[in-house]
Length: 184
Length: 180
Image 1 (tube, rainbow over the protein chains, first blue to last red):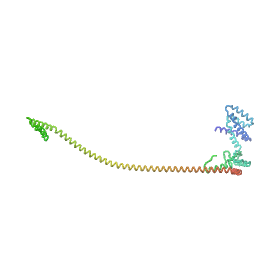
Image 2: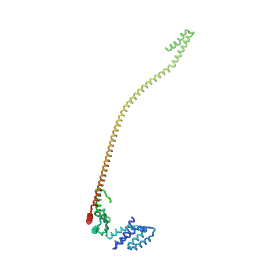
Image 3: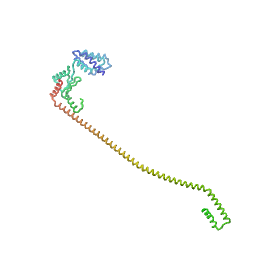
Image 4: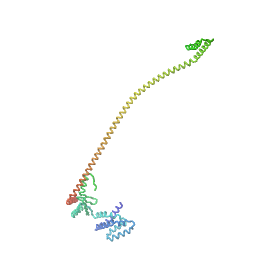
């Protein structure tokens, strides 16, 4: 898909620029915040996607807004490049690949942990350490609470799923008894 | 000759009956008789051959016709015999054909009965398979229903009965497995 290729291309370029800096994660967070603000505002999206508005006007408007907001130069340059190249449409799809690539570059990995009840600080630390030991990378742990899990936990590390929930065990029991695969 | 005397008798009787015989009557009678004899003789001499020939021919024709009739009768009798013989043969032939037809009909009947039996057996087997399939499907549906019910009940019981420490225990178990 041409759009996906463009997303990956811009993401790689952006990550290659910021990954060498100490404040790479801060820059990413700033980019993520600005991208979210811009893409969730319908009027802004309409303005930047409108072909009847001159590109230079869009660039001027965006640059001025970002300067007022005190955005980092790299972030400003990326956003201006997107507008100048008529690629504003891919902005909302750019954040996730940038994060993944950046984490990869920095030797970090994102783990999404789903648990039935909120974790204590001690448990969070233990999970953090366990995942870091397992992956050999620094773990960015995001925790979600879902009572439907019943017990145990479900961890997603990239494309790897470690499912030790009671809910899944019940589903497996059901599949074993009925011979039918239940899609959740 | 008898005919001639008879002729003279019939001519002379009326003359004697009248009792009045004119002069020269007998001479005239004689002359007329001679004329008549000559006439009839001549007639006889002239007509004898053709009449005899005609009579002979007629006799021969009759004989021939008789022979032909006899021959025809013989032929008819022979033909009748042949026809009767043939009729007798035909009767046998008809009986033979009837026998063959009966045999063929019986064979066909047996064949049809055999096919009907096979068809009935097939239908029976299909019905048995269908019943078995339905039974298996119903059994599976029942088992699935019972399993789903059991799992749902188990889930409900777990949600209801599991306390915070139990949930934490399950998470610790997961963590231990993760830590290896």
